[in-house]
Image 1 (cartoon, rainbow, N blue to C red):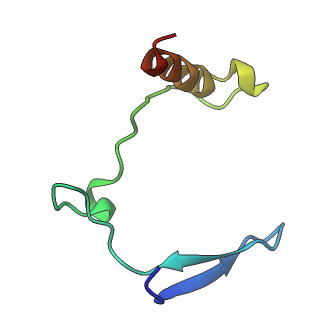
Image 2: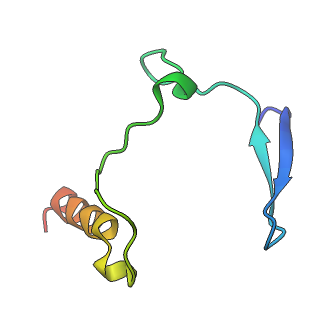
Length: 70
């Protein structure tokens, strides 16, 4: 980090972390705050428990297996 930032604490755990106060630029020059980050893997639906049955977890595991050629 560049020294500029703001500290924040999570209310339940008290975990303290620092947020950087700068714009994030993407490789094409666009700003993350305007364009947002586009996920590599899309998984529709709400979270499901247990996590092994969650569609998002299943989508990530499938994409990872395809990436690794398994």
